Amino acid sequence: MRILVTGGTGYIGSHTCIELLNAGYEVLIIDNLSNSKHEVVDKIKKISNKNVVFYEADIRDNKKLYEIFEGNTIEAVIHFAGLKAVGESVKKPIEYYENNVTGTLTLLKAMQIHNIKKMVFSSSATVYGMTEKMPVTEEADLSAVNPYGRTKLMIEEILRDVYTSDNAWSISLLRYFNPIGAHESGLIGEEPKGVPNNLMPYIAQVAAGIRKELNVFGNDYPTKDGTGVRDYIHVMDLAKGHIKALEKIFNSTGVQAYNLGTGKGYSVLDVINTFEKVTQQQVLYKIVGRREGDVPILYADPSKANKELHWKAEKDLETMCRDTWNFIITKK
Picture 1: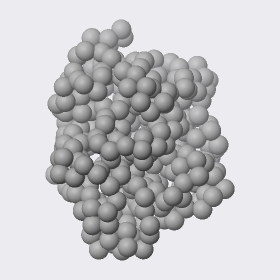
Picture 2: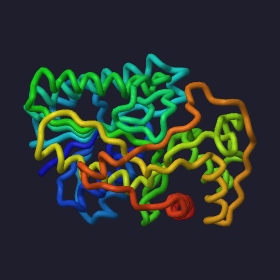
Picture 3: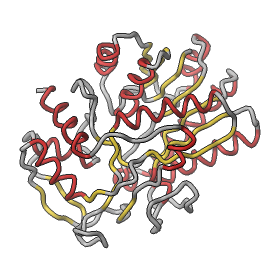
Picture 4: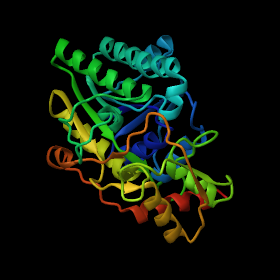
């Protein structure tokens, strides 16, 4: 059974491809390599000891996308491709809407034409906006507060409209919380181009001496130490959630949203302190002003995914930090 993975050489996409291959699926990757490297394809093959088909292409390229669909028998799509930095989205909203929303529409048109009506969509906890009731359930009000989150929310609404128009569609909306960690082999992990936008790769680069210090955005939030609280989940736990969601969409129709998180909230300083303890590396940091578009506290109620997908996050924060550092030192 062949699965198309858009953005499959990216951080979450590459780890999910390994889980797909381990589960016996054939994998076809489309990625424009805007925030990843071609060498990831070889690393996926090495870790899994299986082959993948790779196309360097942008999902907004109608002609190329149709060629790929015509040339392959595809059973379902796992859709990761998109720009993903909250701060950058505030500065470049047009680029985010054009890339994420337009790209998804182009992909959906190709799927519709080729009668492929099963999708697992890479959404985000940012669709919950400034919600105050914790933990967050899937029934919480949706009101994203930054352009990145709004692109995810718009796409969720588009997918619901697609199902309303044709009840043969089966779609899982996976709302990620904060993925960190790396594959236990140390061969793949989060490796952003340029300055990292996410906390853990920045911590790792400071510990490795690549960057001088970490900016901690705000210490005046209503949390135990004033820094923002998030639900950090190991990327391999997240990858396994996609396999469970895929199994679900093959056996049902409709649109369902699922939180993928641990259900635990850790502050920025919790993560820094745990990383230092586990790796014995110092992480220099300074407190700066809040970052526009950030919410103070956000962590998941993952009970729906536990119950309906038979999925649960298993790895703890120490393991997330250890695997991240292992990826950094393996690269050296």
